Image 1 (cartoon, rainbow, N blue to C red):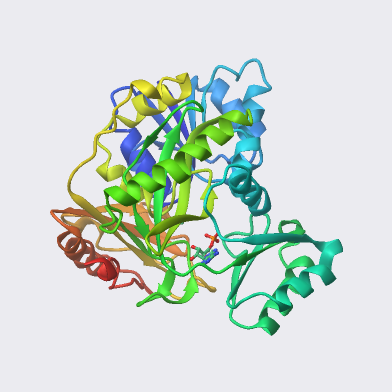
Image 2 (image 1 turned 90 degrees about the horizontal axis):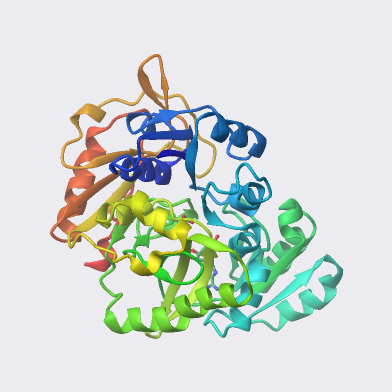
Length: 423
Ligand code: AMP
Ligand code: GLY
């Protein structure tokens, strides 16, 4: 089968790596891909948001499956675009319908969904621009810290945790005043949950689901979880505190009501659900849903997945996931992300990357890289994710960190404490 994978980050390099291992994948195209994905298939200069261009490519190259890495094409309705066109309808798009992608695309909608299905999450209220005064009054009586969330996609910047009432008021006014454009037309005001976060992933065919290995992501730029939020500075899998009792609660209180809720509401969903969870007082709560895999979580989840990914996705598309058994590698996997100097603020691109050929004992997943005149150059905030296996998390991390030192480019930065809080 010819497969088209949409996206260009570390998650997509990991998808490409895993898809290309399958005998069922005879040709893999990655749009637009990066300097790493070109080793797994053919990069094509297509914009994943230009659905007409994707359509043309799919028809011309006899594509049998489209795998969507990032959320934006899904939130904008690429699944529906394929369904609405007779010549595309039989080509599976891995990812939810537009109606399902709202789980990520609208925080207000996802909170309402969780309420409808009694899924544990932080208490909240939502406000729109016409409810400014009501919202401000609600904030004044709210316990600190206060979590404010712009309703729509805001490039990962739409969540602000406010430590004082005055900060909350200023931020609330700014959000409803258009700071995030249409994404902030509604604002969710949420109680702060104190606990430890982890990520759970399922693949669902709309009827049943299969659970993938869990992971823990490190979002802050600084060691000791300090400084600004980033897309993710590293990840580990498994997560030691997610024991059997926790899994039982996650599955019965969160995963099952979510998948059943989507089905009962007749929302087409054949794809990944990413549950951003937090353990509070020994119990799991949902912080957020994503309608795709995580980045950099995929870089540790897929290496631990022994199944043939193409076969798994074919079963998902056909609605026969019930027949599949997930097989997991018992080893731990860790990834350390190398970023550009200045990230998540302003940073420069185009720095020459050297030393990749000396990486031994880790897989170098490319995130923000490009190839120019045969040389690899930086092309994003997150540049590479160095994934390693080990008998346990510390031994895997030693390899990731050793190789993090081997790769060189001007301004390189990485966190040396990924996974340290867990061991
Ligand atoms: P998001 O942009 O939705 O991924 O949220 C960013 C981060 O904000 C999450 O990963 C959490 O660390 C934090 N966060 C969001 N909601 C809450 C909450 N209710 N309580 C505590 N932390 C939160
Ligand atoms: N690592 C968090 C995310 O993918 O949203």
